[in-house]
Length: 58
Picture 1 (tube, rainbow, N blue to C red):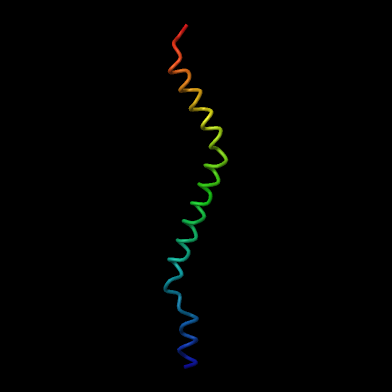
Picture 2: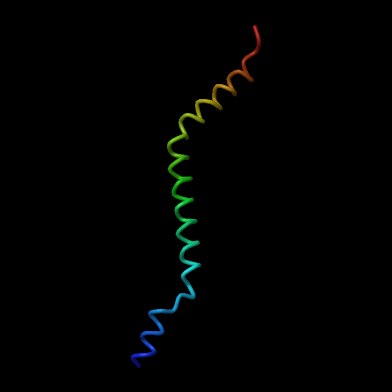
């Protein structure tokens, strides 16, 4: 029983999967923060482009 418990503690089969999951979660969090931070700036940028394209030239 003691050997079985020690073997379960030292088992590292799922370690790589957990690490990849944490990396993906970190990237997703960074993307969400960037979208919220840059959202208003990008909105203003594209609204200005839309205005210039739809306003007739003088």
